[in-house]
Length: 186
Image (cartoon, rainbow, N blue to C red):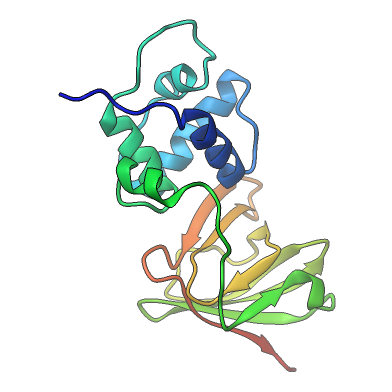
C-alpha cells in the first residue's frame, strides 16, 4: 500500500471548515461536523478521526485513504486523488444566478432540482430565507436558512433551522445541481 500524500491536509481542513461554515475547535464542533458529513456523503466518519486530522488529539499517524476519500466526496470530488487535482479554488459559473443582494424583503424565489422537486422560499432580509411551499422535497415548511446566492447547475447547501428550533443541513440538487431558479412576481 503506497503512502498517502498528506501535504494538502491544511488546505483540506480549510475547505471543510468553509463548507460547514464553522471553525472546528471543540469536541461538539467535531461531533456536529461528523454528523453533517455522514448525512451528506452516506458514509460514516468519526469525530475522533476528525479530531486527529485537525491535530486536536496528540496522536501522530497519517489518515487512511478511505478517510480522505470520504472528505473529498463531501467536497464534491469522486475521491482524494481527484480532489488533489482540482485544487482548492475556482470560479463557479452559471447562466442563472439569483443573489440575496438583489432581492427585496418579501420576494419569493422558486428553486427546482431533480427529480421533479421544488420549493418556494421567501426572502426575509440579511441573507435569510424561509421555506413557504414544497413539492416532493424533504424540507419542512417554515424552515429558515441563510444563502447568498442560488446558481443553476450547482447544488444548494442549506444550514437551516426547523420551525421546532432544530438545526439541519440539507442539500438540494446534490447530483445535478439546481435545474431552475426564478423570482416569482405576485
